[in-house]
Length: 502
View 1 (tube, helix red, strand yellow):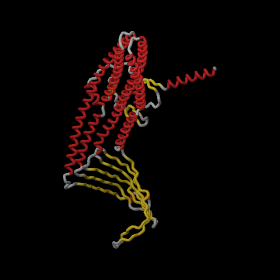
View 2 (cartoon, rainbow, N blue to C red; view 1 turned 135 degrees about the vertical axis):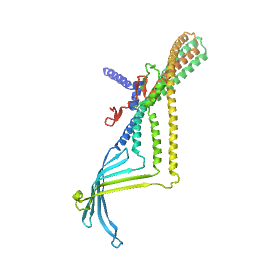
View 3 (cartoon, rainbow, N blue to C red; view 1 turned 180 degrees about the vertical axis):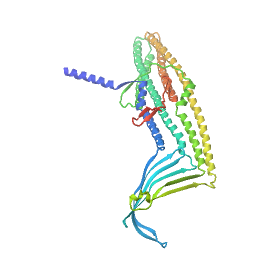
View 4 (cartoon, helix red, strand yellow; view 1 turned 90 degrees about the horizontal axis):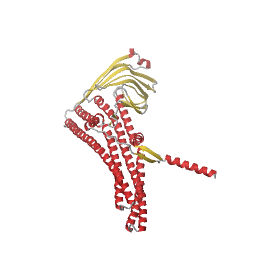
């Protein structure tokens, strides 16, 4: 018997532990923190941030010198080829040979002029297997310069565009996280509303059960009618159905929230609404200035203008083109020893200068059409930028106005909730005392339930609007601090954002 009691006690303790593990309490702040760490949208934001970092790293690497090793090893052939004879005729002779070449050089692009300067050393080897001959030839030292004369300098534009794009990626990362916070807040209150609705429906079920029993007693003593009794029974059935539907709604909203914030365990969530609603004023001009200083969209406007200007410059440069190349150095004579290649007594100075150009005489109006297309697209870009700026300012203005109105509505909703709860308590007591009928009690309960729902919905509107303003301005008006820090840089070694000194 004692063993049975011990096993029963252990089972009860285990059941209590399991139930405790299946239930988790979350505040709004904890929910948002989980979403910013675990949600798919947060992971996507991190990936976009990392992509922006490496894209900018590619641009910076193009400004640094490259040490290049080029070559062909081997180039073997054993086949008949045409050989020109002394009398001008051709004969096919079998050639068994291998050609190899290597070059090692340092190459640097001068971004301010788009000039490519390279210094290299080259060597070539030929093996004639059918004649057992090996020969070398090389350029021990050479310097070359390549200069496009009329083409658009891509580095000039990239030095303006790429830093803006990188800055845009950092701001977009903060915006994406704030957007994640806004979605998490919306899902949090959607579940909270359903949980409160479930409480209301379960209370209504219990209350209607009590009322039905009261009406049964009154019917038995003849103080109420049969239709009144049937109405209370119908209300009880309706309340039971409402409670069942509310449970399904809670399960659905719980799954939505769990999936978004990355909770994989099948746990029951108990949400705790914010204890207080901060009361602060937001000025439109202040909010707009924060948005202009911090939002990625205002960098988009600059980038669009630069891209349009670049397209016009490229269209203008396509009218004609010319490339200047020059090389200077030493070239060895053909020799049978590798050391002779680097014997400067055996070398001759070598130089080459070329100027290639392309100048259309008649182009059928292509250049003019390309220029007009580029100019009109530039105008269209400017119109779109102006309209987008207007739309964005209106969005901020509406958000600021709505936030102020919602704050006033919360105070009204809270007061209505207090009055409705007090009225219901009074009406319920009077009903049990037989001083009011069932219709007055039902009306008081419906008013009370709607007041509770309205207050939770007002809370939802407030916090979603608050995080929307944070997203639009990248500024925390409650704590009076910037959400975007321009000194934060992505560190690939730690895979995190760290503050850099500039």
